[in-house]
Length: 153
Image 1 (tube, one colour):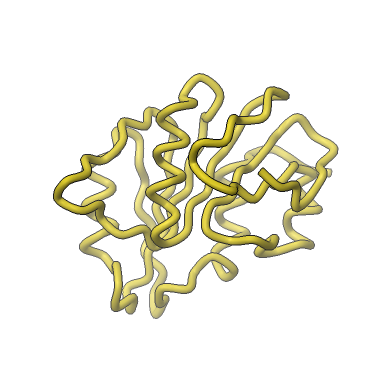
Image 2 (tube, helix red, strand yellow):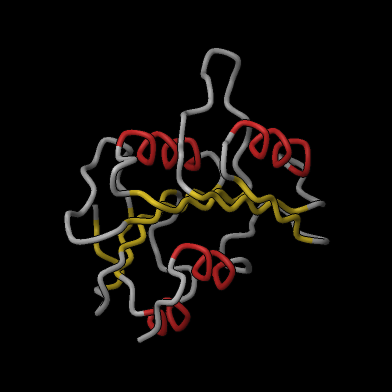
């Protein structure tokens, strides 16, 4: 894992599917540490609670990471993540999960969001009106409010 933002609070967010901070000013204001995940096999940080964010296909790796590290991962956000293939079941993730999908997304859309909402035990689906597949940057403020509640610099 690579550090994108070195935070001042005891809260870490691991980002799958992007190599840069989607909203530097927003992330800084939250005071969290933001890590870019190299792969799902990485070990979680050992300094407090961890949230996991996965965008697009990388959402599947984010879920695998969250399932393997359920003792420290308490929140997950999936953004425009496709349904897994027939040979792959949905990982069992007990964490509170936010699902963000665009209603104009030709790749995932509401059908995929609804599927994830049914597959994950504590999931909330939010559809972005007029949103396409590239929702990571536009939804970053909402993702941070879910993944780092009550965190402020």
